[in-house]
Length: 398
Ligand SMILES: Cc1ncc(COP(=O)(O)O)c(C=O)c1O
Image (cartoon, rainbow, N blue to C red):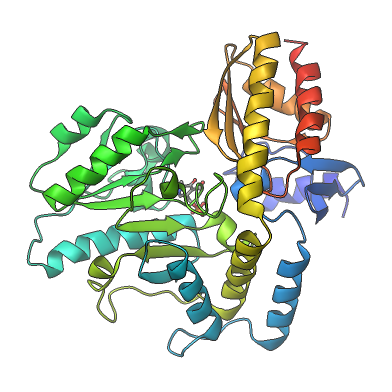
């Protein structure tokens, strides 16, 4: 089907939640490269919004999925599932969690985290402890409850009434957080590095103070690692940068390398609050999705991708900062590993993104001032050099 027919069908038959999309349809991907339906080649520095951590068509992921699809795609959670047990073991052995539950997306994993936190206090005979404190500008998903948890009005205003029991405080302001806590507070929910609002890492001191406060006040600490998890920041999980352990954390995006899967991970003392029947999922943790998760974990842990994210991410940010010295239109470069935000002093992020696209690079923009770069973790320093030369070229027009 040619591109104009795809666009025609989309306009006619698909709900218009994505507005005017970039007019391209991709057919094939290999490593960091994508090819569109007209045969044009692109370099993907966005990974489907932090999903394709291994790059496209990674041979180990493709092999694992092919083998699994020929054996068994789905079976009910009423039966034991070998891949689910294996992936849960891998995640527990690599993290601070003791137990895992599989969902199908980031929002769903976060819903599970919120349910688990509330159930934990109910099962302790404290049903009045139900309130979740989250941060302004955060993003936690698009279900009613995760949109309520999200600290950006645009995602929730059309859907009032929202889920009761959520409050928001500004990030990196510990006093504001402390003042917001009441006897009803059950959990603090945060992204260690906010992604959707423009790559905003939280301060180490702030996160450590929150951890102490939670431990002293019997409040659960939940990290949403849907975007920051799975090696993106140069560590397997974002919390590992801060020298703290959350009680609950959630994963999705890169966990399946493109196959939908989310995970709710928790310490045993919280996880055991879920009794049989309290939570569930038809698809969550099926043999196919977990085969993807196992292959992704295998490549991340054994093929040096996390170290590469750290090394190439540092090189990328250094190169961007050098460019900023030549082109002061770049105001700030921030992030960790290969989760990078570039803020401009002009409201032209969308135009800059579009110009880069015209030159064959996929990146994202957040609002009018920030570019978001989330490449596959297989990126090399030469790939970075190529993009910096292109960006430099593009910015010289602004
Ligand atoms: C930090 C964070 N949490 C949750 C979500 C929602 O994930 P999903 O779109 O898989 O529901 C996202 C998606 O961008 C995210 O970045």
